[in-house]
Each structure stands twice: as C-alpha cells, then as structure tokens.
Length: 136
Image (cartoon, rainbow, N blue to C red):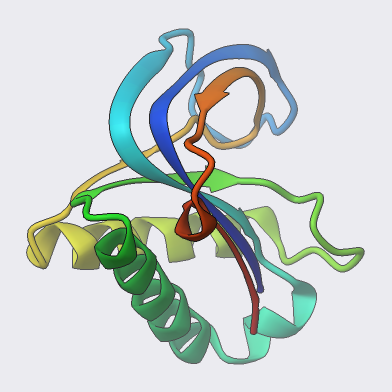
C-alpha cells in the first residue's frame, strides 16, 4: 500500500466522471476544514494480507491525524502512486472497515466517491507534518 497524507486547512471535491460502473452513483460534492486527507493506493500484494494492511493503514492515519491535531480524516482512492493495483472491491472494503474503526475511535471520517474522477480543491499549510508519504 502507498499512502500520501496531506493535512488541509480546506479540502473540497466534486464528482466529475464515473470510472468504475460497479460502485454507487454520486453527484454531490463536499467540503471539509482542518482535515487529514489520505490519498490511498492499494497494491495487488496487499490482497494477500488484508488485515495487516488494514491495521497499518489505521495506525498511520491515527498517527498523522495526531501530528496535525485533527480528529477529521477523509479517505480518497488514488490509484496513481504505484504500478500494481489491487482489485477495486478489495480496496473499497478496506476503506469501509477502516472508516468504521476510525469512527469507533472518535474520529470523524468520510470517503470521497469511489470510482470517480473528482475536481479537487486543496489548501495545505507549509509545515513539515502536513505532507507525509508511507509505503508498506
């Protein structure tokens, strides 16, 4: 898994074009303030250890949120961080499980529409912990 986390003072999205027909139709955008945005790329090898990948993703998200003093996290599928890609349904299932676990730990969590190209608007402060990349 590849994970790019960006702490944003403002993050907004609007669905533009659907790329995966198997997922829910979405037309509504959203906007967030003081949020950790997780650009997540699940790789094919992650399918061999879903629980391990899920646990590492959760640990990294909590750590980065704490570093940036936020309880708000947005999960965004971003399949452009590596060449290998996991099955889309596998990735969405990881997102759903991590979202539930984060909410049980008192985080406010959202997901961008899965299977869409989105218009993104992101404002991030120029501080070191606002941009963190992890590969595991």
